Length: 393
Image (cartoon, rainbow, N blue to C red; front, side, top):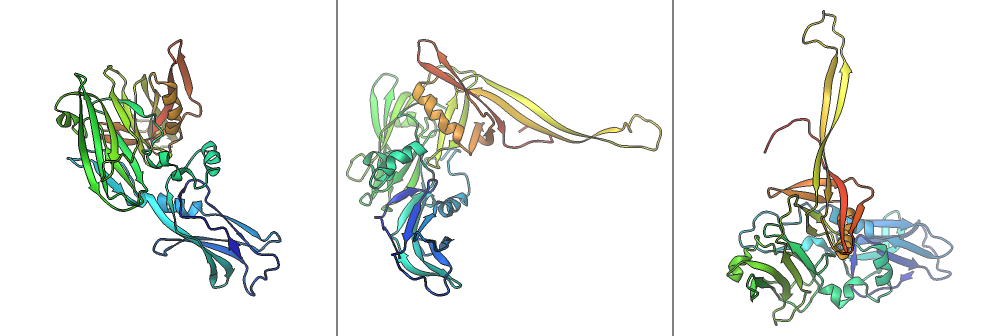
């Protein structure tokens, strides 16, 4: 029995993680065994799951262990984003968004798996790639995370330049894979209203853990950027340097949108990297209320009075539904909004509070401004709960 070992790699738990075990021709199955089994354990040897396949004439056994790793990430307690004012804390670590694991394999009998094979340790990160991306990166020797540009990527698919406001929240997540980095210095270059720039260090971290995810709080008001720059700021860039002053991340730019938007709404959602993006919708917004009513007929032996009419409401549920528009966006931003439409965890931020919502649109409406190459996306959503009482906050 054997299988092809691979060097230590990082894989997405949301995509298939396949192992093929094969027997040599003529290899006898040990007495009392009922097949070939595979077991997944974490870095401490704690059992995460196992699978069993009966012996077949092909002498090959295909396993996909992604479900076991996904189950580990599904148990994480939300939220994994920082919404409230942080009081000078601009960096948060999430060691549990990375899982170190290995597989053990062998023949399976009444007492379990008799381990004959084991792989090197690997790492799994929550999230996944689209099928098109998997096809591309499967053709690369060590996959998506071995590429130097992806190692520098902040965990978002948004274009590198983002419009925002002075009140919106912004975060950037970074997955560090560097074995030689012991210090992380978060740098900000602010462009002030008069066109001059100021570069400052927002925060630094001493940490030598190779595989870790951290969140940077980089919203205008959240990091009090006017204090850093000494004046009002129109845009700012964010990147990370190591202890030697070398950039180890890409550079992301935030630009203040000075236009007034009557219907501006802010959302935070879980993206395909299993971390969170903030997005501001500036198009029209419409709220509707829908009611589900349950009425019963009640017989009264008494004569008719003001208070014993036979039709009684026994249950009334109120749902809040909405129609919204992105406002005018570029084609790249429109494509990025597929990320929002695919998210299974979305919150609308109202008065610094995150209210969970579900998108109900099965199809989006897209509009083009003639000759300007600007687009708009319309969709519908609802609060992720119903009410049977009314009150104000």
